[in-house]
Amino acid sequence: MLNLTQEEKKVVLFLAGIALLGMVVSFGLKQFGAGKTAASFSEDLGKVDLNRADKRVLLGISGIGEKLAQRIIDYRDAASGFNGLDDLKNIKGINDSKFAKIKEYLIVK
Image 1: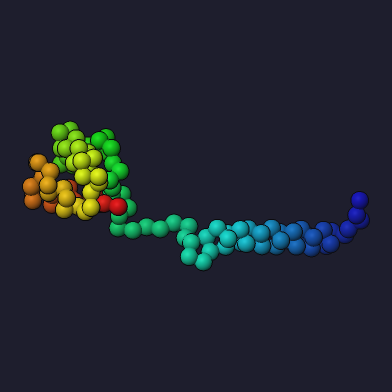
Image 2: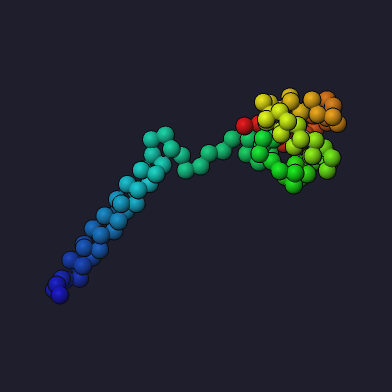
């Protein structure tokens, strides 16, 4: 096809590599540039959202048993969701010490 010298073949491969790298960088900037982040971490990472958690997830929190998990879900349904963590104090079985124990594992979004 083309009669290129070994040196010319190296140059063509180098330029193709640079072009490919440019396309990858361009794609990355479109996906993650200007205000977008590839990943974000916050202090909420790993916490359970009271407005989304099902019973199984709530049972995974130390201090929440079967009955309390159901009361949390019932309260959430009746109140159309939690407005903040302090709403937990309105649930039977959650006194100040229980609240202090479980609040570090929970968030409300």
